[in-house]
Length: 341
Image 1 (cartoon, rainbow, N blue to C red):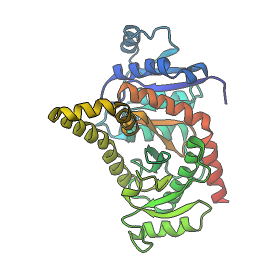
Image 2 (tube, rainbow, N blue to C red):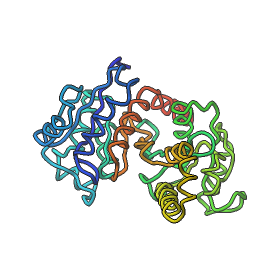
Image 3 (spheres, rainbow, N blue to C red):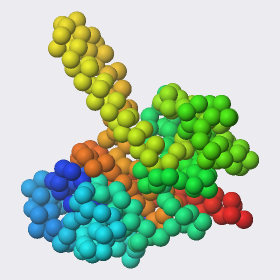
Image 4 (cartoon, helix red, strand yellow):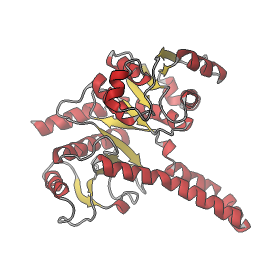
């Protein structure tokens, strides 16, 4: 791996516009001192004049941030496959091309997830033996972060795909979170072996005879309790789960605010427990996790939430750095190869 690391960022993707991406890039250099000293540089991909003006106005002109021009933008409403064909000079495709040419080692986008998946596959290709990459999200729990995959890339998965998700989740948990023997579970409507649709029961049997530390089924309420290190599901279920979790922080924060408005005693209690509440909020805030990697690619592709704030963009950049340097891609290659052979 090179001593220096260059990350490409789709500056035109996301709901909040290029200004938030520029702010996130600058925030990265101001707050992530460990990675800054490791010679990380950024390339923002998008409208050159617009980005240059934003960087200058926000005081980032002297930072190691460069610009790669792209004249087109893939919107959230664009069809993934058609957008790649009709918008060859889009910021997302230009960014993916930089990694394909070896000019960057990782890429980040808060844009159209389906298009990001398609662009990543087009530019990077899959690890041998992986038919479909999966998006792996990290959810907080009472113990270590819990890896959930897939959370949106694949709907209607075959049993073999779900088995591979488990293998990739195991590698990711080991390399990124340092868990020696991750507990692998299969999301289901109950913990009894006889429950669930036929496909889930078939995957259960496959995992039970695998080399993984398979702990059986898990129900939704067990995830945040820390009952597993890796939770396997298809993209439809995983995306619903992820979006539900992301609303928890808003519910907790909103409820707390309303209580403080109603009672002076609640305001006094908040002042006394402000530090604890801040820690809880930090744990629940999806912006702390930044972005989710696409596992199974011959490269590094991080998908950030469409409504990402500058803080979330910053943390998505951090996630791309940590993913690249963790060696998880190589571990997945080995896991899949051992299964094939």
